[in-house]
Each structure stands twice: as structure tokens, then as C-alpha cells.
Image 1 (cartoon, rainbow, N blue to C red):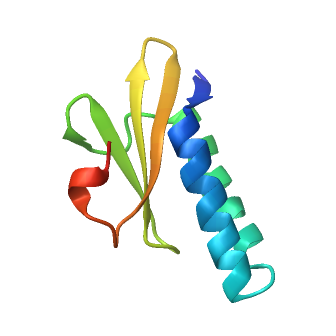
Image 2 (image 1 turned 45 degrees about the horizontal axis):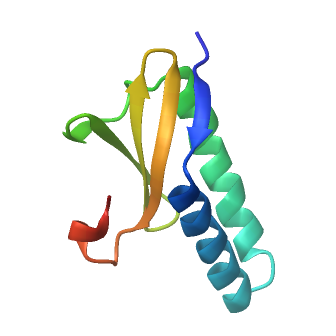
Length: 95
């Protein structure tokens, strides 16, 4: 089963900020970051229970190539992405 993906505005903002920051550091790095996030999101859509539940009901997928977590919840046939969180930030700001 492939779950429906819903990306909340905060996650969209997180993603846009990260892409802009990486692209300002090196041309093409923002695109590489986006490609990695999309790869993880596609995997999560197919296997949403693969990643651990850190703080119920939220799950966290760590992006190995970049210091970011995708924080999401599975509700029925949907995966709701709440944040694309930079792990250098204060963990209390995750949600």
C-alpha cells in the first residue's frame, strides 16, 4: 500500500529554508538536499512504520546525508509530515 502524503506548511517552510541555505553554500547542494528528502518521503510513503516512533504518535526519519529529520505521523492511509527539522537546532523546537 502506498500512503497519501500530506506536507504541512511548517515542513514546507523548513524545506524551503534548508534548500536556500544549502544552495547559498554551494551551487547544486540545495538540489541534492531536495533529492534526498524526496527519496526519503517516497520510502516513507511505502513503508511508514519503518522509522521509529520517538514521541508518540510522531515518527522520525533521519536523513543520513544531511543533519535533518523528517517528523511525521501515520493516520489511517495518510502520512502527515509536520517538520523537516535541522538537528543542530534545539530539540524542543521539533514540533
